[in-house]
Amino acid sequence: MWYGRVSKGGRPGGFVGFGNMNEVTFDSEELINYEGGWKGLLADNRLQLEASVFYNDYQGYWVNSTRLLPVEQRIPGESIFEGEMNTIDGSRISGLELNAAFRATDNFTIRGWYNYLDSAIGDYETIYCCDPAAPTETIEFQDREGNTFTQEISGLTNFGGNRMPLQPRHKFSLTAIYDLGDLRLLGTVGHTAEKNTDISNLPKYKIPEYTRIDLRAIWFTQIDGLQVHLFAKNLLDEIAVQQWRPNEGYGFGTGVIRGSLTDKREVGVMASFRLGGRKTLYGLGGGMGPSAGGK
Image (cartoon, rainbow, N blue to C red; front, side, top):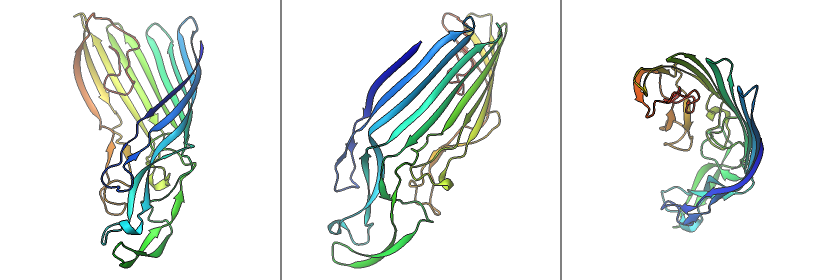
């Protein structure tokens, strides 16, 4: 079956906050999504395939910038810069998604998906906070009380064409399921390619790629609906960075960096009860989370 759709969405603008005395609100973020694809069953319904391509055209995309305060707003002893939220045009996301499930035998099934993402920021110029290697210049400034002082600052940087933050170019997951009567065995391997922390796309701030393996065994007991799960999540115990931003915390030097990590390896046993007692083959959740493995 072929399909296509066009949709429009967005997030409403909001209140800037008390840190910016010039702009009270910022505009909404909007996009138009174009998508087309195909889905169907093949090989006597043993093979399920889905493929789609999409293009997101942003009418406005939110970015944070740093700008120089006008003289009348420069308070002695305080920063002469302030942050602001901008809504810029010309940004886009494009990509493709593939999903497949193949029932090789009555007992063995393989499922998987692959996602490719490409993105670009619209033309956007700002003073970037977090590159100590960037060229700087020393400039004389004046505050609102007429005091003069010098400060070393970075020049303007144009981030137009850079990839959007936290969007890996490649991502995939593959799950194998084997049924042995009342026992089901599952294994999932997932991979996430490197991604950028922010729109600077500086190599030193990239989040490295990582691979994760999950294993699970499910015993469908004689009590209708009662299941016992033995699981090992993140079998390799590979702790990966999920996100962090150089401009958060207290600077890029010796300051505090805030972010989030994946969970460490976890091995355990749990029981679940399903009303109706139905045993399903494809109840894998996302294939990577604690619900992976059937219902």
